[in-house]
Amino acid sequence: MDRAKQAGTTLVQEKLINWALWCEWGLVGPPIQTKAASAEGEYVAELGEVYDPPEPVLEPNMLEGEKMEMLLRELPELQRRLIKAKYVSFPYQRHHSNAQKLRISLDRFETELRNATERLGRLWNREAKNGSQPVSAS
Image 1: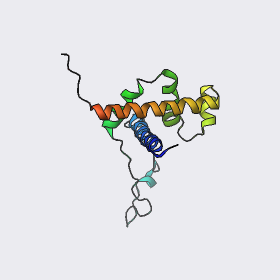
Image 2: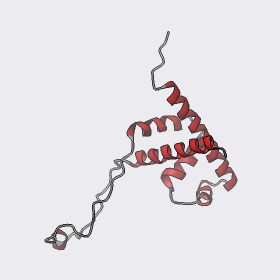
Image 3: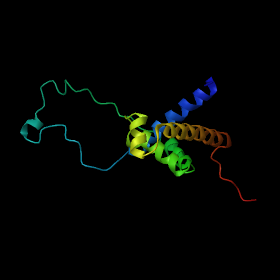
Image 4: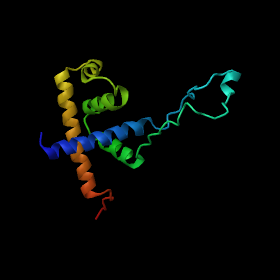
């Protein structure tokens, strides 16, 4: 793979990871319980929260997330399912497991995933080149 293609693939992967964060941003659900529900949970040491440093919060780039969502809607249905499985539903599983869950062969999974990322790269570059200016009806 040449450098330009490899750089384009990594850019698309970064944008897809941002899109996955965008998809899960602000999900409504029960709060995660980090302390005991009894009186012990209210205890604060004299030195304060010594053992738990604040966790870093990854915030997605909302504009790029929305843009990637619009570009993903232009893909065929199978490629959309593959991208969603890899980046949102099962991000920590290997391609083999994702292919089994989607009931397709590993070769087809990897081929379609590569085609989808290349197509997204072309669409992203086309949007960047043309800008997001509305097309005027003349």
